[in-house]
Image 1 (tube, rainbow, N blue to C red):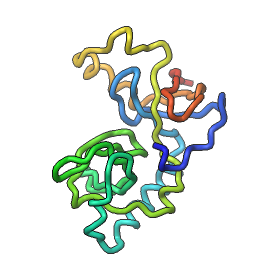
Image 2: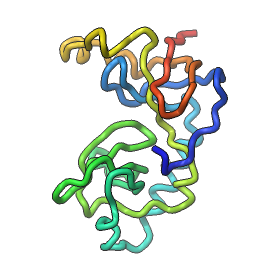
Image 3: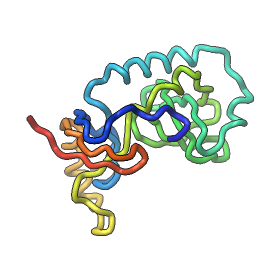
Image 4: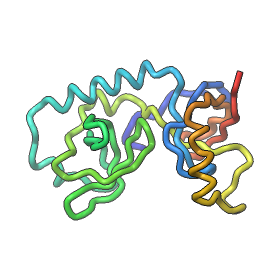
Length: 173
């Protein structure tokens, strides 16, 4: 996510986080437990779409382009990164949550510089000790067990590189 500001976290700094979007044990997104910055980003995103619509803007977007995109489930606007351009839509990842979806061309807007300067509120993680090379969980296991991860606070203690998958350990206390 090189177009967005990188977070300023020191290696070995401990942060409390929770899972915001789970794909696999080796691939899920976390957010900071303190949602103050996320609330600020969300508010600014809703305000930014009130400006006049530039109908030529979607023509400038391609993979790696930042934008605001409408999430159809809650009808709210969120910061996104274009992953792929489709016929009449874009496949985007919502950088503050980690979820991906297709968004109609009419439902993308320019991202103001002020929102580009704020670090993404979600980042990739994996459970320590899990590896893609050792297989994956089947769909039945995922549907029965992934919901437990959504309400657990994790202790994030191996940041390393922002672009690399990081390790999280369960923190219950």
